[in-house]
Amino acid sequence: MDKMKTVLKNEFVSGKTWFDWAFLAVGLFLQIIAIVTGFISGEPESIGLIISGLAGVVSVVLCSQGKISFYLFGFVQLFTYVFCFSIPNNLHGETIENGMYFLTMLYGMYAWAKRYGKNNKTESLEIHARKLGVVGNIVTASIFVGGVVAYYFFLKNVPMFGVFDSDPFVDSITSVPAYIAQIFMVLGFREQWIYWLILDVGSVVLAIRAGSLVMTAQFIFWTLNCIYGFVNWTKLSKGKSHARS
Image (cartoon, rainbow, N blue to C red):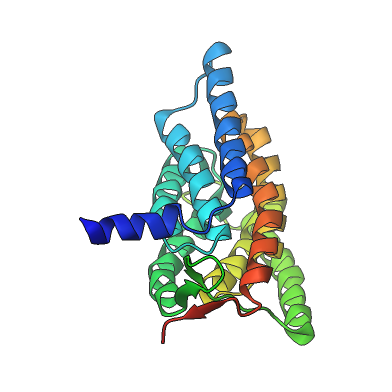
C-alpha cells in the first residue's frame, strides 16, 4: 500500500506547480463545456467520445510533464477515439495512424522506463529528454513535406474497406506529423511537440467538420498543450533530471 501511495504521489502530485494544475483544469473545463453544450442542443456526444475527450486531456498533460503514467490514459483515449470517431467518419489516415500509436506505445513504455529518473530540483520522477541538432531538424522537416505529399495521393486514390478517404488533404496533414511526433516521443526528443502542434491544428479542422464539440475542444486544448509541452521538455532536456541506468 505504501509503495502504491509513493507511485501515485510521484506521478500525479510531486513536482506540480499551480500553473500545472490550472492548465489541467482548463482542459477539463473545456471538455465539460462541450459535453453540456451537446446535451443542451439535443445532440449529446456518445459515452465513448466523452471518455476519449477526458482521457485525452489528462494524457497529454502528463506527457508534457514527462510522466510515464500518461500511457495509461493514452490507451483509453486511443481505443475510444478510433471506434467512436475516426472509423465512423471514414478518416482512414487517422485510423491507420492510431494503429501505429498502439504499437509504438507498447514499446514506448519500455523506452521511457529506461530514461525515467528523479529531477534533483523537484524530487519528482520524470523522463530525461533530448533535443535534435540543426541537421536533424532539416532532415525531419524534409521527410515531413515529402511524406504529406505522398500520403495525400495514397489516401486520395486508394479506398479502405471500399470507401475513399473523406478528406485526404487534411487527413495527410494530421497523419504524417503524427508518425514523426510519435517516434520522437518514444525516443524522448523535445521536437515531438512541433509536429504534435501541426497535427493538432489539422485535427481541430477535422473535428469541426465532423461536428463533434468534444473532439473540437480536445484538439484545441491539445494545440495549447504543445506549447506547454515544448517549454517543459526544453527544461527536461537541459540535464535537470537523471535517468536510471
